[in-house]
Length: 251
Ligand code: 13P
Image (cartoon, rainbow, N blue to C red; front, side, top):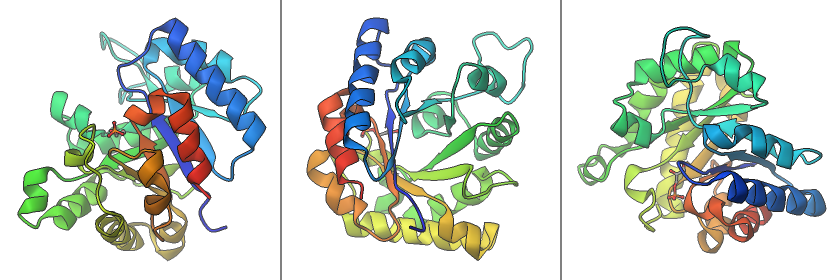
């Protein structure tokens, strides 16, 4: 298989210790029993990383965080470094999510710098890109996403360490999903951009996930598109049953 699918749950700012632990345990048990064809990742908030890591022990479910700082350590109140995430047992970190770009003014240049720092710390990264509704309606979706990919991708990107997530902003948490055809159009375009950035071999092996109201009912069709290599799931990743139903659709 050229690209093994990845189903990743982005828990965002949700969960207390008890329910985070319960959700992680349910996912770990199901994944152990089902031995799915895809890789599985959960990305809880910082406060739950250690608890979730323990709950996942003995399963193949990987652990990720939702952001990191560029620096390794120092006077940055409230921030967490990639080295600290690695130390806490993380495999992955999500970077440049549209909620961080919007709420914290994160630029492509900052996302790229964070990605490089994370790779140096031994983490894998998921770089998020996606257009707003206004950009889509004015016919600029491909152009916007292309610019984000070109400017956010770290210099030393490889297919085993970097994953791209296409998350149209208008589809996040809205219940509106991109049609499989529209999503595939953007994914195929991203892959073309990657050919120029990373060369043909890396581009053909790099995973491109779809995110934005993915749920059990629409996952199979989205995941069957040739350039959709998995999902970055928000709301539906908070219910073990729904998340596992999506995992089962990723063949
Ligand atoms: P929803 O699945 O809730 O739309 O969120 C998608 C997302 O932002 C994942 O990062």
